[in-house]
Image (cartoon, rainbow, N blue to C red; front, side, top):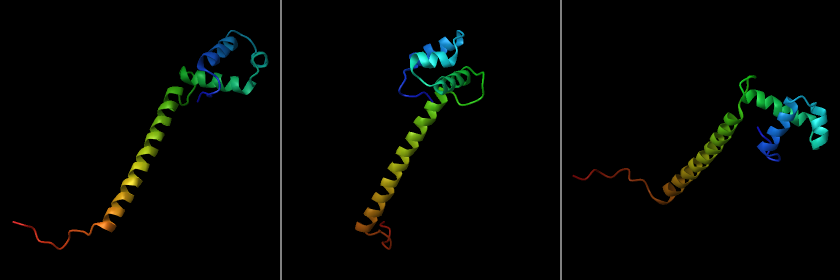
Length: 101
């Protein structure tokens, strides 16, 4: 998952420098970021390109959106259930009355 602190364009330029043959340690030092950050970006890039197995950036974004929607729906469901409970406390059930003709 991309870190929010670095824009995708910056990550792409860093990866381009590494792919062009510059050592990761040198690029990291020059740009003031950690080596591990670049290695993480490079691994994710390989996953996105289909060269390594794993969850792509697009799939990660979709999963986050789905999980967020599930949380929203679960909240709506719990609110609805609570509302039903409150209504049942106030409004007596209609049981016992005969059907009208």
